[in-house]
Length: 230
Image (cartoon, rainbow, N blue to C red; front, side, top):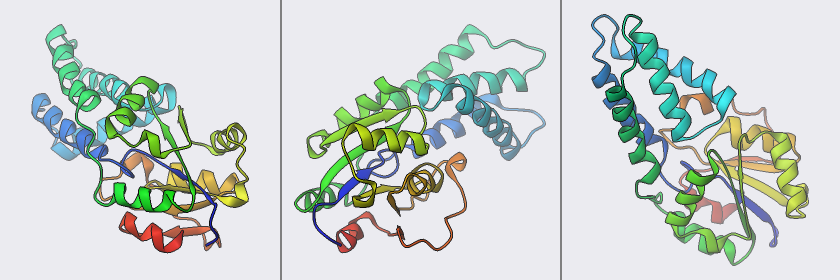
Protein backbone atom coordinates (compact mmCIF):
# COMPACT_ATOMS: atom_id res chain seq x y z
CA UNK A 1 0.00 0.00 0.00
CA UNK A 2 1.21 3.50 -0.81
CA UNK A 3 3.11 5.56 1.72
CA UNK A 4 1.53 8.60 3.31
CA UNK A 5 -1.74 7.01 4.45
CA UNK A 6 -3.70 8.18 7.49
CA UNK A 7 -4.06 5.39 10.03
CA UNK A 8 -6.56 5.92 12.84
CA UNK A 9 -6.24 3.58 15.81
CA UNK A 10 -8.81 2.56 18.35
CA UNK A 11 -7.46 2.48 21.91
CA UNK A 12 -9.16 0.05 24.32
CA UNK A 13 -8.39 -3.60 23.48
CA UNK A 14 -6.54 -2.51 20.35
CA UNK A 15 -3.53 -0.74 21.87
CA UNK A 16 -3.94 -1.69 25.52
CA UNK A 17 -5.90 -4.10 27.71
CA UNK A 18 -9.31 -2.87 28.77
CA UNK A 19 -12.25 -5.25 28.79
CA UNK A 20 -10.38 -7.89 30.75
CA UNK A 21 -10.43 -5.43 33.68
CA UNK A 22 -14.21 -5.14 33.38
CA UNK A 23 -14.50 -8.92 33.16
CA UNK A 24 -12.53 -9.34 36.37
CA UNK A 25 -14.76 -6.77 38.09
CA UNK A 26 -17.89 -8.57 36.88
CA UNK A 27 -16.70 -11.86 38.32
CA UNK A 28 -16.08 -10.17 41.68
CA UNK A 29 -19.47 -8.46 41.46
CA UNK A 30 -21.25 -11.79 40.90
CA UNK A 31 -19.45 -13.18 43.94
CA UNK A 32 -20.61 -10.15 45.93
CA UNK A 33 -24.21 -10.57 44.79
CA UNK A 34 -24.26 -14.22 45.85
CA UNK A 35 -27.73 -14.67 44.39
CA UNK A 36 -29.50 -17.63 46.02
CA UNK A 37 -31.41 -18.69 42.89
CA UNK A 38 -29.80 -17.33 39.74
CA UNK A 39 -26.70 -18.91 38.23
CA UNK A 40 -23.64 -16.84 37.44
CA UNK A 41 -24.63 -16.84 33.76
CA UNK A 42 -28.13 -15.62 34.63
CA UNK A 43 -26.78 -12.79 36.78
CA UNK A 44 -24.42 -11.92 33.94
CA UNK A 45 -27.33 -11.84 31.48
CA UNK A 46 -29.21 -9.36 33.67
CA UNK A 47 -26.13 -7.14 33.87
CA UNK A 48 -25.54 -7.31 30.11
CA UNK A 49 -29.07 -6.11 29.40
CA UNK A 50 -28.68 -3.24 31.87
CA UNK A 51 -25.33 -2.32 30.28
CA UNK A 52 -27.02 -2.26 26.88
CA UNK A 53 -29.65 0.16 28.18
CA UNK A 54 -27.21 2.39 30.05
CA UNK A 55 -24.61 2.60 27.29
CA UNK A 56 -27.32 3.83 24.92
CA UNK A 57 -28.45 6.43 27.46
CA UNK A 58 -25.18 7.50 29.09
CA UNK A 59 -22.26 6.36 26.93
CA UNK A 60 -19.33 4.16 27.89
CA UNK A 61 -16.60 3.71 30.44
CA UNK A 62 -16.08 2.75 34.05
CA UNK A 63 -18.45 5.39 35.40
CA UNK A 64 -21.37 4.10 33.36
CA UNK A 65 -20.30 0.58 34.27
CA UNK A 66 -20.53 1.48 37.97
CA UNK A 67 -24.04 2.78 37.37
CA UNK A 68 -24.92 -0.49 35.65
CA UNK A 69 -23.60 -2.55 38.55
CA UNK A 70 -25.70 -0.51 40.97
CA UNK A 71 -28.80 -0.87 38.79
CA UNK A 72 -28.18 -4.60 38.52
CA UNK A 73 -27.81 -4.96 42.27
CA UNK A 74 -31.07 -3.07 42.79
CA UNK A 75 -32.86 -5.27 40.27
CA UNK A 76 -31.59 -8.46 41.89
CA UNK A 77 -32.51 -7.25 45.39
CA UNK A 78 -36.12 -6.10 44.96
CA UNK A 79 -36.83 -6.26 48.67
CA UNK A 80 -33.76 -4.37 49.85
CA UNK A 81 -32.30 -1.05 48.69
CA UNK A 82 -28.73 -0.63 47.54
CA UNK A 83 -26.94 0.56 50.67
CA UNK A 84 -24.16 3.07 51.13
CA UNK A 85 -21.87 0.13 51.86
CA UNK A 86 -22.88 -1.46 48.54
CA UNK A 87 -22.18 1.74 46.66
CA UNK A 88 -18.81 2.16 48.37
CA UNK A 89 -17.89 -1.37 47.32
CA UNK A 90 -18.91 -0.75 43.70
CA UNK A 91 -16.95 2.49 43.68
CA UNK A 92 -13.79 0.73 44.87
CA UNK A 93 -14.31 -2.03 42.33
CA UNK A 94 -14.57 0.43 39.44
CA UNK A 95 -11.82 2.75 40.69
CA UNK A 96 -9.32 -0.01 39.90
CA UNK A 97 -10.44 0.14 36.28
CA UNK A 98 -10.24 3.92 36.05
CA UNK A 99 -6.90 4.40 37.77
CA UNK A 100 -5.16 1.11 37.05
CA UNK A 101 -1.97 0.77 35.05
CA UNK A 102 -2.34 1.07 31.27
CA UNK A 103 -0.92 -2.21 29.93
CA UNK A 104 0.03 -2.15 26.26
CA UNK A 105 -0.81 -5.20 24.18
CA UNK A 106 2.09 -7.22 22.85
CA UNK A 107 3.66 -5.77 19.72
CA UNK A 108 1.85 -2.42 19.88
CA UNK A 109 4.81 -0.13 20.54
CA UNK A 110 7.03 -1.67 17.87
CA UNK A 111 4.20 -1.65 15.33
CA UNK A 112 3.31 1.99 15.88
CA UNK A 113 6.92 3.09 15.57
CA UNK A 114 7.33 1.13 12.33
CA UNK A 115 4.12 2.49 10.81
CA UNK A 116 4.88 6.05 11.87
CA UNK A 117 7.95 6.07 9.62
CA UNK A 118 5.70 5.67 6.57
CA UNK A 119 2.28 7.03 7.55
CA UNK A 120 0.52 9.56 9.78
CA UNK A 121 -1.06 8.05 12.88
CA UNK A 122 -4.16 9.19 14.77
CA UNK A 123 -6.09 7.94 17.79
CA UNK A 124 -9.88 7.85 18.10
CA UNK A 125 -11.50 6.38 21.20
CA UNK A 126 -14.87 6.53 22.91
CA UNK A 127 -15.83 6.84 26.55
CA UNK A 128 -15.60 9.30 29.41
CA UNK A 129 -13.20 12.04 28.32
CA UNK A 130 -11.24 12.35 31.59
CA UNK A 131 -10.88 8.59 32.01
CA UNK A 132 -9.81 8.00 28.42
CA UNK A 133 -7.31 10.84 28.60
CA UNK A 134 -5.88 9.30 31.77
CA UNK A 135 -5.26 6.05 29.90
CA UNK A 136 -3.80 7.83 26.89
CA UNK A 137 -1.39 9.74 29.13
CA UNK A 138 -0.51 6.58 31.04
CA UNK A 139 0.20 4.64 27.85
CA UNK A 140 3.04 6.94 26.81
CA UNK A 141 1.81 6.69 23.20
CA UNK A 142 0.40 10.20 22.76
CA UNK A 143 3.53 11.63 21.04
CA UNK A 144 3.15 9.07 18.24
CA UNK A 145 -0.19 10.50 17.10
CA UNK A 146 -0.78 13.58 14.98
CA UNK A 147 -4.24 13.94 16.48
CA UNK A 148 -6.40 12.41 19.19
CA UNK A 149 -10.17 12.27 19.46
CA UNK A 150 -12.38 11.17 22.37
CA UNK A 151 -16.05 10.81 21.47
CA UNK A 152 -19.20 9.49 23.13
CA UNK A 153 -20.06 7.14 20.27
CA UNK A 154 -18.07 5.96 17.26
CA UNK A 155 -20.70 6.16 14.56
CA UNK A 156 -20.29 7.29 10.93
CA UNK A 157 -20.87 10.93 11.88
CA UNK A 158 -18.03 10.74 14.44
CA UNK A 159 -15.66 9.47 11.75
CA UNK A 160 -16.76 12.15 9.31
CA UNK A 161 -16.28 14.85 11.95
CA UNK A 162 -12.82 13.50 12.83
CA UNK A 163 -11.89 13.57 9.13
CA UNK A 164 -13.00 17.17 8.81
CA UNK A 165 -11.16 18.25 11.96
CA UNK A 166 -7.87 16.78 10.75
CA UNK A 167 -8.39 17.41 7.01
CA UNK A 168 -8.26 13.70 6.16
CA UNK A 169 -9.30 12.30 2.79
CA UNK A 170 -11.35 9.16 3.56
CA UNK A 171 -9.89 7.47 0.49
CA UNK A 172 -6.43 7.73 2.07
CA UNK A 173 -7.60 6.84 5.58
CA UNK A 174 -7.95 3.54 7.42
CA UNK A 175 -9.49 2.78 10.81
CA UNK A 176 -7.83 0.04 12.86
CA UNK A 177 -9.52 -1.58 15.86
CA UNK A 178 -10.89 -4.67 17.57
CA UNK A 179 -14.61 -3.93 17.23
CA UNK A 180 -16.66 -4.71 14.15
CA UNK A 181 -19.49 -2.60 15.56
CA UNK A 182 -17.51 0.54 16.44
CA UNK A 183 -14.32 0.41 14.37
CA UNK A 184 -15.16 -1.39 11.13
CA UNK A 185 -18.75 -0.86 10.05
CA UNK A 186 -19.07 2.90 10.77
CA UNK A 187 -15.64 3.64 9.28
CA UNK A 188 -16.58 1.85 6.06
CA UNK A 189 -19.86 3.74 5.96
CA UNK A 190 -17.90 7.00 6.32
CA UNK A 191 -15.85 6.08 3.25
CA UNK A 192 -12.68 4.92 5.01
CA UNK A 193 -10.95 1.59 4.93
CA UNK A 194 -11.04 -0.60 8.02
CA UNK A 195 -8.81 -3.24 9.58
CA UNK A 196 -10.10 -5.57 12.28
CA UNK A 197 -7.53 -6.68 14.86
CA UNK A 198 -9.51 -9.19 16.95
CA UNK A 199 -9.12 -9.35 20.71
CA UNK A 200 -10.33 -12.47 22.56
CA UNK A 201 -11.92 -10.39 25.33
CA UNK A 202 -13.83 -7.91 23.16
CA UNK A 203 -16.93 -6.68 25.02
CA UNK A 204 -20.07 -8.58 24.02
CA UNK A 205 -21.88 -5.33 23.16
CA UNK A 206 -19.19 -4.61 20.55
CA UNK A 207 -19.87 -7.84 18.69
CA UNK A 208 -21.40 -7.64 15.22
CA UNK A 209 -21.34 -9.57 11.99
CA UNK A 210 -18.33 -8.67 9.83
CA UNK A 211 -19.08 -6.84 6.60
CA UNK A 212 -19.78 -8.55 3.32
CA UNK A 213 -16.70 -8.88 1.08
CA UNK A 214 -15.34 -5.37 0.74
CA UNK A 215 -12.23 -4.16 -1.06
CA UNK A 216 -11.39 -1.82 1.84
CA UNK A 217 -11.76 -4.29 4.69
CA UNK A 218 -8.96 -6.43 6.14
CA UNK A 219 -8.51 -8.61 9.20
CA UNK A 220 -5.11 -9.24 10.80
CA UNK A 221 -3.74 -10.88 13.90
CA UNK A 222 -1.51 -10.15 15.68
CA UNK A 223 -1.27 -6.38 15.39
CA UNK A 224 2.32 -6.58 14.12
CA UNK A 225 1.01 -7.84 10.77
CA UNK A 226 -0.21 -4.32 10.05
CA UNK A 227 3.30 -3.56 8.80
CA UNK A 228 2.72 -6.07 6.00
CA UNK A 229 -0.40 -4.20 4.86
CA UNK A 230 0.79 -0.63 5.36
